[in-house]
Length: 251
Image (cartoon, rainbow, N blue to C red):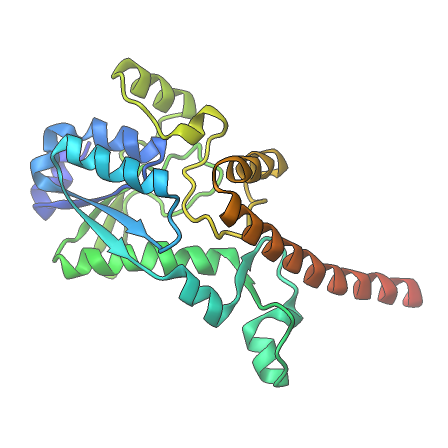
């Protein structure tokens, strides 16, 4: 599937997170690794075991790779911590408009991911002079993301595993004898940032497993995360309570 694109673009960037989908993509495209550069984004809050797995894996494959740096802590300090529920009074734009500093500042979690993961990678792709990006995204994934074949600002995005299922990925890796990061023994989560305060997107069960994993293996980061989650909960509760009061009064 990727041969025509490589013929047209010359080389491609493969976005590698260390998750099982990008791991399957790395293996699936190994016959073309001489024309592929792997990119991993370290936000400054990468789980150490994931980052080590990424480096060890890319070294083992012998593929050219770069670690792209971003600063998620700086982004959150400037814009707020990411949240599944965003109480508007606690956002940067409203707090600045009201000239009031809220007890906690929050931001939509997609903005955090966009600015700390996707955009740094795309900027790096452009700096390398590349115009083709390969992703491990599948149609079966919960979040649609960028459709295969999308062309934006001169960058073509291809998802070679688009028609694969989760089971296809797992069976493919197992058939090749490829190990996965240790968290996959407990949950299906690539674990991008240990400071992520928006764990509910994948459902309550997945969020619970993520936090329990952190509590067991990363207790210091877990304690900080729980404090920030409590801050988000408190802010959201204020807005929800106010809405409830309003409905009671006018109902």
